[in-house]
Amino acid sequence: MDAPTFGGSNPVVLRSGASLSCGAAMGREQWLALSHAGSTQRLVLPYPHAGLGGQELVVSPDERYAVLFVYSGQSEQGYELLELSPTLRHLRSVPYREGKGDAPMFSPDGRWLAMLVTTTPMVRGTDQYAEDAFDPAGEGDVLVDWAELLVQAVPDGTPRVTAIGTVLPRSFDHDTFADWRLHGALGFAADDRVTLRLPWSSDARLEVALPAAEAITTSTPA
Image 1: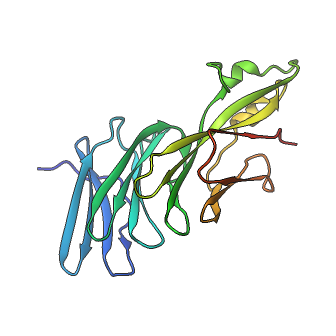
Image 2 (image 1 turned 90 degrees about the vertical axis):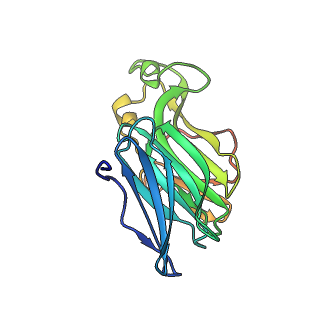
């Protein structure tokens, strides 16, 4: 008998009337099913190596592609890119990456896929943790990478990871910095431009043209 299913989201009903659903058999596999007019296409994918805390389905605006967003529940997340039409087909895996954030987002024209996560803060270009670089009596600035923007062209682009860093005074309060989060921060300003709402102010925003550069540096928050 199969292990109980868990995780998943409610089925997504497409404009065609088809229903896309997902689930998992604990420790064994993930699955997706596309059902329409009494027939069902079923796709089985490997179970994530670090376990599965949950799944979420995201469908492109033209309903040709979908993403199965997966997360471990232990600060790791990734996704599976799928083609829905003309048939259900797996296109690419993005294995778990360290970080916390929301499900990937398609651009309005469906040509780009973007995912934004917070990561372990590190001093750019070094192996030093940011918390070790801060000092209430410290002088000067430090450039800390604390987030990543992952972008790929749909359907067959190679995902590109862009570090996001901020120049901060070494005397900056580490507890304030540690509270920065990016949930709900990603959006599209145009088909080929993403916007990022920065965590230190509701008015602080960054616009990035796609494909993004290898690294982004933001100014010190006021």
